[in-house]
Image 1 (cartoon, one colour):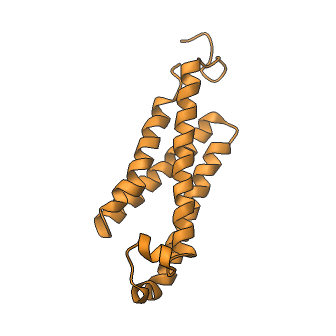
Image 2: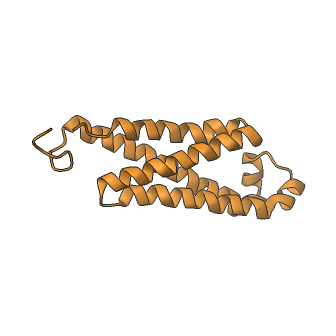
Image 3: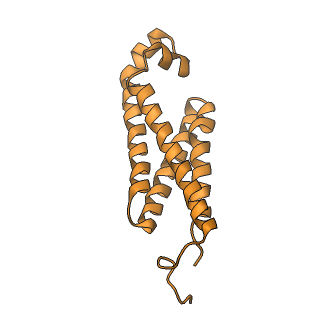
Length: 141
């Protein structure tokens, strides 16, 4: 048994750098989901939104309410990731970030299977990379 609890020992520079990298990646995934929220809730039927999602004006009009709902869910994912980034308890913050990154990965995999394989690269892959970094950044006791 270590003489110092993992939560009270000083972190090495390498551990701090890994934590910083992981948190930057988590923040990037959160930023992506804020962007998805904006595109789906506010720009869905605008030229920029239709270009991104390869929609016609007719299809965008028919699916506008569904897209806004989807955008709201992406906002909740971003909010959860941001909550994990700002939470003061590192152990609980890790759990929050891991949970929401897993939610993003599952949502991305489902979207890839049901809508477009492109979603796997745009949504699930960044979250998987951030999750891997998060686990690598955990200090060893």
